Length: 392
Ligand SMILES: Cc1ncc(COP(=O)(O)O)c(C=O)c1O
Image 1 (cartoon, protein in one colour):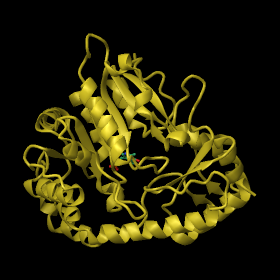
Image 2: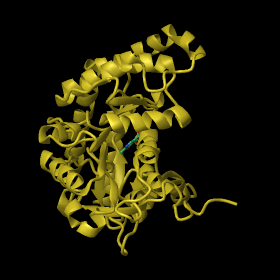
Image 3: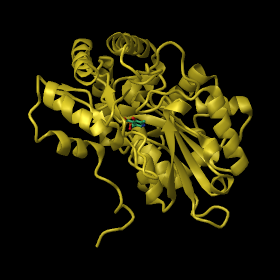
């Protein structure tokens, strides 16, 4: 006996990719550009802090975050966005943002809205946890295509008023995975305005916010605060995975209004998986330190320049504004990924695996996603082979 609620979930993107490619030998030395796992170095002192505080593995961790970590997070939010948050009430430490993006739905999505079932808005394509979070609470996921003509962001104004009346949560990822699109101040302001009008929450997934070309992407908390919006409106998610090249540390945070955070803390007390204490100590130092973040961004800026140089003449190439993915137009993403692997050994992800077909259209179908995480030389080799194979 198994639940039906997940019966329509397709296989996750990476097993699908293995099924597509692994029966075929690579046509050259393999270059992996599929997984968005950062590969720049993280600060060496992280290991020292963990070693110095290893004795605390013998204690149950602070559920919501140590006071020092919560203070460091609030200081960072103030530096980055100019928004003053209270460490005791407005933030909670997460074991990586993926669990937070999921558990926030458990804690915050009401069972009904205006007498109807809840609706959750997602961009299409999207980071996969959004869909499973909506399904887990029995909400109806409604996918809004993030099309090229709308700057690869979902067009919330296309949602009819009747539907908006049922919306409990809207996810927006900026800078976005997979397209590297950035929501401008006006985009956030428009969505926050709709959320105020129709009384829903925004889950702002901003884990790529420190990886950009030259202008820091505006944040949802910043725009909400400038607008004087209800502090419970925006729930923002941030991570050390990309900012500090520590996806294995599993450390992030959620910020929002006091009631939002209190509800998330309550759920965490029952069913949460808090970050071990030595890792919380390391995270505190990481949020306090900007030098390693600046250096990390510099390395990505070199990679943007390299991608622009190699792919600049490819028809339809759109230089990503931020993040570390290239979202490249092709006739058919699956066919292109297979051809590229078989002919050159370069491994990329078909865009369709990150989206869903709605009304006969999957907005990722005509794209492939390539991650710019490998060392520069390897990345240059991969992108050159990709260009010569797919765009010659
Ligand atoms: C858009 C997006 N959101 C959230 C996450 C989760 O990151 P983490 O759980 O490592 O903080 C990722 C990871 O790849 C991502 O791409």
